[in-house]
Length: 134
Length: 333
Image 1 (cartoon, rainbow over the protein chains, first blue to last red):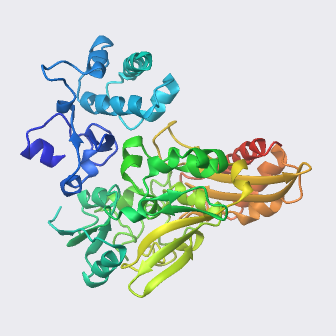
Image 2 (image 1 turned 45 degrees about the vertical axis):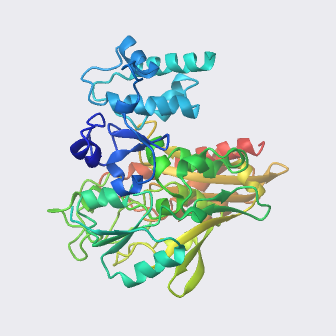
C-alpha cells in the first residue's frame, strides 16, 4: 500500500486501519481481492495488481460498479468507497452476490463509518443482476 | 518498523536451512496477515524474513482421499472454504474457514499460517505500558483483573489468560488432524491437538514447534462423522469478528443413540480445546436439548471466570448444545 500511494502516486487505495481490519486499501492481486496494507510490495513481483485506478475504461468510462455506487448514492464521506468498490467487483465475480444476506457476509471485510451499507448492498445487487443477464 | 533482509527460498529444505542458520531474529512469512500486522505494531521486529509463499507444492490440497484429507500448508483459506467436497462431507472444516476473517484476508492467509495466528489480547497487541508475559516475559499480565471480557476461561494460568483466536484449528482438533513438519533434522508428525501449549508459567512459548521448523501439510483422517458436523461461532457482530465462543460438534447416531461424538471449543480457551468430557456425556444417549446442554456443561466444568468474561461459560455451554443439535440434524436425528 505504501508503494502504491507514496511511490507510484496511486492514492485510490486508502490507508484506513493499516491492520487489515477495515478493507479501505482493497486491491486485486491476480484478480483476487486482498488488503494491500498487509502485503509486502515484494510479494507482488511478477503478479498483476489492479487498483481502483485500473477499473475505469480507456476513455475514462466508469466501471458498472462505480456507476452503480453513484446511482445508489452508496457513500457519504467516500473514504471507504474505493475499497468497497474493489471488494464489490470481486464479490460479484466470485459469485457471492446472489442475495442481500450473502452480499453482506462477503462484504463484511469493508467497514463504512458513515453506514452507507443499505445503498452499497443495493448497488452490488444491481451489478450482479446486470452480470447475470448478460 | 525496522528494515529487514528478505529472501525467497525455492524449496522447503532451503526455507528450513535459512531459518536454522539465520539467527534468532528471523521470521517466516507466508500470507503475511499475522506477521506483517505484528511488525506494524512493533511486536515483531525481525532482522530477516523468509518468504515461503512461492513454494507452490505446498499450496495444493486434496479432499478426495479415502483415508485422509490433505491440505498443503500454503493453501489459501478462501480456496479451501469453497471446496464443494469439503462443504458436503466436512461442513465443520469448511465453516470454520468461512467464518474466519474477511474474504480479502482469506485470499491471503494460508492454512498453516492460520494455525499459528497470534492472540488478539489487547494487552499483548497494545504494548507498553501494559504488562504482558507473552510479549515481555516477567512483565505481568494486565488482562488478569483488567478488561478481560474477551479472554479465556479454560486453560488459563496466573501468567496469561489470552485466548487462542483461530477457528480452523478448533475444527481440526475435533477430527484428530495431524501436521507434518520439516526441520533441520528431518520431518516429524504432530497432532494438531498437541501443537499449542497452555500458557503455564511460560506464555511466550505458544507451540511445540522449534523456530526453524516449517509446517508442510495438514492431514485429517477421513471419517463419515464429517458429514454430520458443524462449526458454530458466536460473535459480537454477525460476520467478520473473532469468536466470543465457538464449538465444533460432530455426531454419529445409531437407532437414535449417540455412538460417537466430537466436541471442541474456540474463543474460550488458551489453545484449541478438545472437550472429551462433553463427548463422553453423550455416548449411548439420545441427542436431545437436555443431553446437549449436559454435554456443554461438562465441557465447561473446569472453567474459571475472570472479572468480565464469566458470561462466556453460560454462552459457551449453549453454543456447544446448539452445535450438537445442528450436527444431530445433519445426522438425521
